[in-house]
Image (cartoon, rainbow, N blue to C red):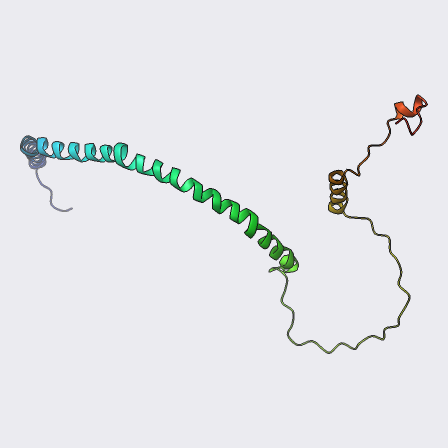
Length: 162
């Protein structure tokens, strides 16, 4: 069953604990509360003063002074480094990390017998970029002439008048 204390002992212990806590908290607050509040008030006042009158103007000044450097760096990166990285990307575009590794030892490949044939001229459709580049160059050189509208042809105006 175990041993049990009398109920009045627990009630008296609780009362003594509560009274001691309140008494010592009150005494400590009377003796030290004012000084601790003064200390923390001064600390937060100094911190607010530093942020408003020292740190913020320094950050604004630094931002204004480095704006020119940032602009120059962006120009350099855009003019010099971007074409270089795009070229390197164009070189390495065919390499993929997700492809399986090729076996190191392969059987030797027998060369095929090559016969020379006359060259065949293939007609290739220009790519989208090539078509747009051609249009852009034509416009810049003044070679782009708009097609005649149907209304002009219907009125019987000759090519010379157009």
